[in-house]
Each structure stands twice: as C-alpha cells, then as structure tokens.
Amino acid sequence: MMLMKKEMKNVPELRFSGFTEDWIQTDLKKVCDKIQDGNYGGDYPKANEFLENGVPFLTSKAINPDGSLTEGKVDYISPEKHSQLKKAHLQLNDVLFTNRGANVGVIGFVDSRVSNGNIGPQLTLLRSDHKSITPLFLKNIMVSFSVVKQIRSQDSGSAMNFFGIGATSKFKLIIPTLPEQQKIASFLSAVDKKIEQLTCKKELLEQYKKGVIQKIFSQEIRFKDDNGQNYPDWEEKKLGEFVDFIRNGISFDQNNERQGVKVTRIETISSNKIDINRVGYVKTSKDLSAYKLLIGDLLFSNINSVAHIGKVVRVDLDYNLYHGMNLLNIRLNQDVADSTYCFYVLSSNKYKNHFETICNRAVNQASINQTSLKKINVRLPVVEEQQKIADFLSSIDTKISTVQTQLSETQNFKKGLLQKMFV
Image (spheres, rainbow, N blue to C red):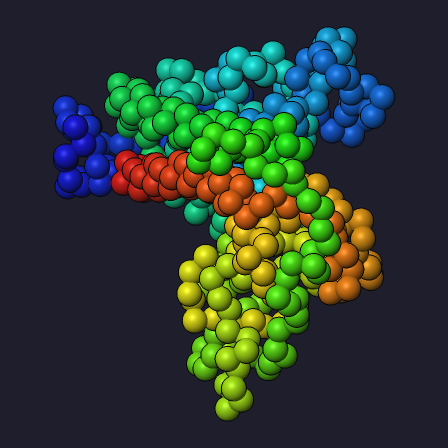
C-alpha cells in the first residue's frame, strides 16, 4: 500500500509500494494527442438547431463543480449538424476542461453517455497520448493542487477570463511511469465510485422524501393510532388561529467584536438550518428575554430575494440565540400544532410557491407581512397524527444527513489523497 515517504526529488508524499522511479516534469501539450476548444461564432448551433434528442452537445452548464455530468442539462443536435462541427468530436475517456467563467478549471470526463458528442466554446477537449499518460490519471492530475494553483495564478476572476488552447497547453505536470499512473488511477476510481454511489443514494432518498410528502399532505398516505384505528379527519385552519404569536425580531446595530448577545440574521438560516457561526452580535443593557428563541420556534424569511422568500427553519436546539432582524418568529400553540409537522408543511414546494406568489415585490427584494402570513390555510390532523408524520419525515432526514456525512467524509478523503499522491 502507500507507505513510502518522500525521500527523492519529484515524488509525492505517498506512493504505492514497488515504485521507485522519479516522476518527470512535462507540459500538458506533450502528453496529449489533442487539445481543442469547442465550437463558437458562426459554427455555434442556432436556437432552432437544438433538439429534444440526437447527438449530445455539451456546454459547461452540464458539468457539476465535482466534475459529474447532469444529463438533464445536456443539449442535443442533429447528426448532420454534428458532422459539420468537425473540430471537437468527443471520444470515450476524453477529459474536459472548463476554460472560462465562474467554473473555470472544473474537470469533466467523457463516458459512454456522451462519447459520440460535441462541445461548445466553454469547454476544452483534452485527449491523452496513451503512450505517455492514461486518461484517468490525466483527469485526476488536472484537479490536483499543482494544476489548480497554476489555474488560480492566471485566473483574473473576470467573467471574460479565458484559458485558450495556448495557455492550457502550457500547464506543467509531474507524472510517474504508466504502471504507477494506472495503479493510482485505479485506486482513485474506486474512491470516485464510492462518491458516485453515495451521491446517488442521497438523491434517491431526497426523491423518496419528496414523493412521500406529496402523498402524506394529500392524505393518500394516512397513519393510524396505537390501536390501529383511523385518526379523525383533518381540519383546515388559518395559520393565525393556532399560533401564540408571529412577530418581528429586535433591531440592532451589529458589532464586529463578536461580543454581546447572539442574534439571528438572514444568513443564520441560509443553509436551511441554524448556522450558529453566521449570527450577529449586539451589546445592550435591555432585557431581551422576550426575544429568546425556544426549541420548536420557526424562523421565517419574510424579507429577501423572491427566490429565498419564505425559507423556514425550525430551532432544534437551545443555541442561547435571540430573534434578530428580517426574520419572523412563528411560535405555535403546541396543544394544536406540532412544530416539526408545521415546519414540513411550510417548507414544502406547495407553500414555497405560494409564498413567492403572495409576496410584495420591490426592485431588489420581496416581503411578506404578518397579516398575510396569518391568513395562510394549513390542513391539520390531530396532534398525535402530526407527531407521527413529523417522526416519519424526520427519520428520512436523518438518513439523508447520514449519507451526506459519509459523502463529505469520502470527498475530503479523496481531497487529502490528491494532495499527497501528486507532486
């Protein structure tokens, strides 16, 4: 296994046993049979030349930051148009380099889904010379720290920034012999496979949750009591009928010393949960006990961009946190409504779309006032059924969170490997 420490020039910190040769420095152009950007200008397909099916035509939008492909974002052209665009026909195991824009440096890999395809100008095709470098090793070295550092050093951060074929060809690589490349690539491919499996598992759980929520809230799925009997029919109530209060938070002048009382900001719930690292601080001698957030409170984003209006987060722990600006605190009457159940209701796509519809829109932001929010209709089962629904959905969220943790750990493991396995 990889136990050898770096003792020679041009060798990585970790290596597979049995390999002792120095790695050699070379330019990208010397290990590629082809370096070619995609079609642009008069050759670029016109709007009416894109089809529902046909030959895949890739642009940078189809490649995720982690290099995976989103098939739903692949465009298609006719075989005739593909034949006209001759310069960048894809082959299996080509490497794709995103050469401009916010995602500059993102690396994709051509698999069987798009191996007969074509590319737009935001992508550069890298076709390895198999006598010098294996495709999978080329893919991984292009996301290594040594290459990323070269990209960053030349990236101006401008949307107009562009890595042409000339600049791309000059990237410096330090590579081992082909057998060692193959060993490294095989190992990293196994890690990539694990990442792919975890990503797929998470997506399936999220799709399952979405489908279950639709069926539960349409009452296609019902829960029974502990005696196996049906619960009473659901009642429709306005939100204002079963809350203790809906109110604005305290206004404050935030200090930069991170001292005083911790108060919520919009950023505190931007990740769909309480992020205690993104709070504000206020120094005051006033009694703020009335604004202390309790477990079960719902924080509702009522002043934000239209896309983020109506975001809901449930306070799940005692964070010793107080209710700040630009968020409404919804505190429910617990005899009537379970806060976790109401969190799932209000954060569903149905209500998200409704909030966007009813909000007051200004130039750069939207808002929903308390009066409008109190008028929203919510279908409520009895509290016992609400709690069973909440427990069931929470169990799915726990599974999703567990998979996300495994995915993050595996991604970080790979990141660490790349730092130690490449010079």
